[in-house]
Length: 63
Image (cartoon, rainbow, N blue to C red; front, side, top):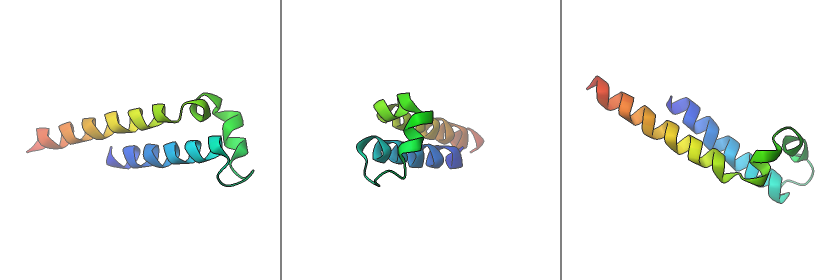
């Protein structure tokens, strides 16, 4: 689950960079397939934070 949250944090950064045109046109196809996440990249951050909290809850449950 930690892996999933790290991947989601990375994807949030990529969507943010794609929406602002940080890397030129290289990430522009990303906005064609995930248009809603390019418009609101913070939503991906919220999902990643929820996954991280959930993973921490699961880790505490095993102790």
